[in-house]
Length: 211
Figure 1: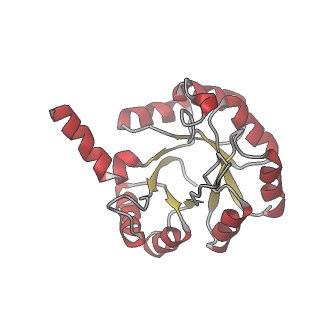
Figure 2: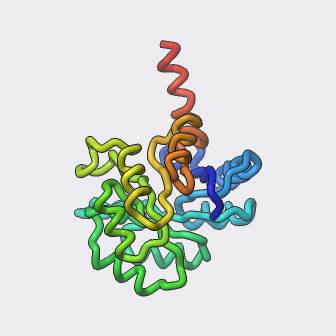
Figure 3: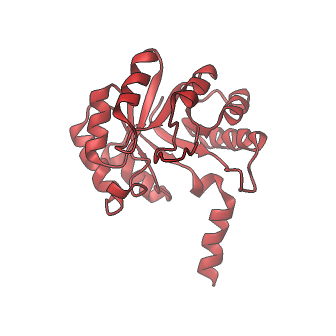
């Protein structure tokens, strides 16, 4: 994966652009803009995007289970499904909300697959490095109970200083200025999603400002 912008092309079931075809075109638009990679959710979207672009793909499957906080590629079932797509990198919730034994099992079973740790705190990032992940991403900073009051730039800075793995800035780096700041700090890449690929959110910002 080259350094630069990774565009997250996702649309959930209740969103107007929920379509594998549309996500593949979003990915094509991102490539045309100069993106170095795509983050995608679900097997169907991944397979359609692979038909459209040859950029490195980070794959996830969002799935909620009863009595389980982790929802980003949370079980071996989702990991196995992503493996079948021959995805470049699989992202997994690697916060303390996910069982450490599960993370070890995944990494030990699929030794040739690259894995990204979606984390929310410095300690979670350092644990992911010790476990054997290939990338650390700040995806879940502010989205877990243990990170509600954390500053994403502070987490990013400390992980860049203390970890040897490439650190991916993700999670509300929603302006070119924030993305550039992250890269200047030493982030390997920046993932941007909603600010580029979710028009209902983009439009709402304009509406709210006009009102």
